Image (cartoon, rainbow, N blue to C red; front, top):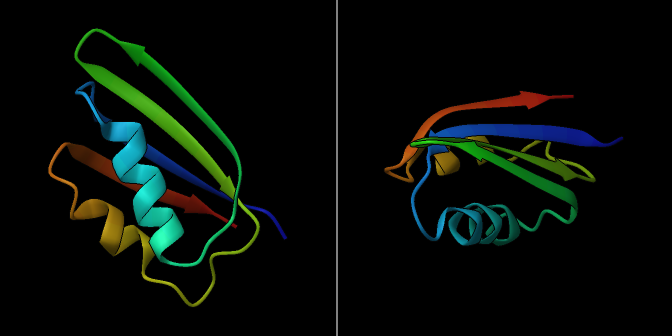
Length: 73
């Protein structure tokens, strides 16, 4: 089933690329991606086909500008 990953992060250049590269590197297929920013903060939603068995949260949290990551199964 579809899995939603949400990332709350600083609104800095190259964040979408870093998030998508990190997700893709785990072999996850991105079905949909949405980014909203306001001032110095931004929120990115990534829908993937599957995420079980991956350490995607830990990997995304390694990106310096990311403040919080949540996964909804």
